[in-house]
Image 1 (tube, rainbow, N blue to C red):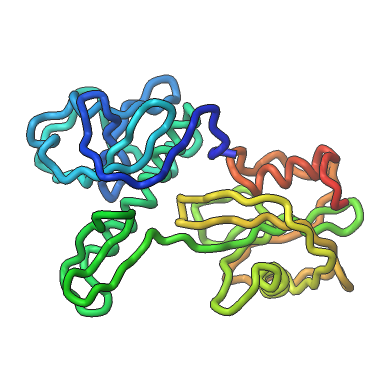
Image 2: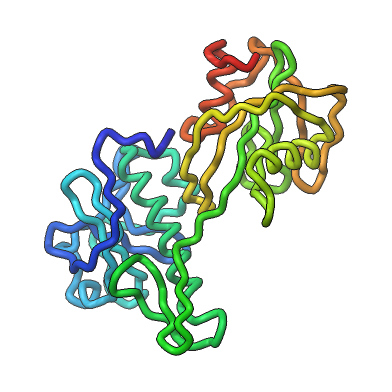
Amino acid sequence: MFQDLDIRYDNAWRKAAPEADSVALIRREDGILAALSDGRLAFPAFGQLSPAARGLEWRYAFTLGESEYFLTQWDDESPLPEGFEFVASREYRNLGPKDAVFAAAVSESLHRWYEANRFCSRCGKPMRDSDTERARVCPDCGLTVYPKICPAVIVAVTHGDRLLLTKYQGRAFKRYALVAGFAEIGESIEDTVRREVLEETGLRVKNLRYYKSQPWVFTDSLLFGFRCELEGSDKITIQQSELSEAGWYRRDEIPGDYSGISLTGEMIERFKNGTDDCG
């Protein structure tokens, strides 16, 4: 999965300023500033930027390996460093190296959160960064807001030697996937599994077994992977607002057209290869 890195990731917040060799994560609504070469991303160092760009508001994001990464919002007036362009997430998520893709995705989530919390949702006053933690604080009414993380499930539903595969309706992602969905207020994560499978396919499940989790920062989510078995009829009734198709596939019938960086892809791969214990 894309977050499985060979170097240390340290996301503990601290108050710091970028140095010349710090990695610059420069975001705009249409993507992140990067250089592309042979399918690989590279970000500018802070020292490569123009004086105007270095004068923007910079926030410490995280550390990968020995490098500190800092985040800013582009002002559209400073000249771009030579050889760099803005790259959208749909383009960079299948590139390399893995640590650069991870950094780009995490910065996208952080950028969305900072931009969505410029003003207090309670009183409307401008928010400011906390001096002690990664949070936005209203100096007027005291409201404190933390980065957005949405719990969601990925569900591998099996029936003997068959796996339920789906395709989303009306999304840019056209590959095969598993049943997925977000948890609702007051709902356990296990109840989310049962509800999402029933809503999207009309099927009931039993013998839920937790597999593993994945931070999916492209949608500000924390994914919980579950394996479970069909209970009752295997007749599928598609929720057409969510899915374009859904069907049962035996191990040797499973198509190879699924994500290679996601929890979904890993779970499909394990079932396909017979290394999963839920079939």
